[in-house]
Length: 202
Image 1 (cartoon, one colour):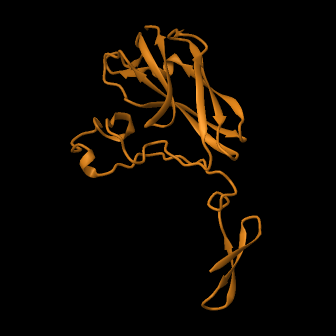
Image 2 (tube, rainbow, N blue to C red):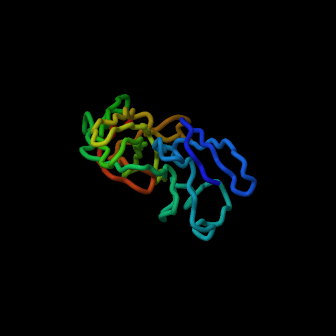
């Protein structure tokens, strides 16, 4: 079938076998007229052999939050028709009180040849926790539309309470006094910049 654009998302197709004309609708992203910005909400592993036996709900070694390997299609993965550069990850403060909030900011530049959308993702990792914590903990994301060569800043508020865990002995949230690593990237397996902060105890 030969497709001829008729405007918008509509194409006229001539079916060579029946010599009839059919109207075909093609998504603008698939046709290259709009940049895709979808991201995977799950991790696709290479093989079930990459995962441990599932005996309980501890999830050790499973999902992007605990998996130690490199899956072919990780959580947060997506494609684009252009490229983006990340630079100057900074925070409004180096420390945050247990009842406080700081802001993380990163400059995102469209370094490709056409306009497009990026999904900037902020993950955190506790470096001194007294309990087992997630290896990758998504704390925010921003869809960033950039024209060719354009640079703009993606901003993430980060509250200390969002870094807490549920303490069964205390029957409440526990905010630990510890260093926390902030990671900004394009998926859970592709980090571009990192910065360390310190959270106050509680």
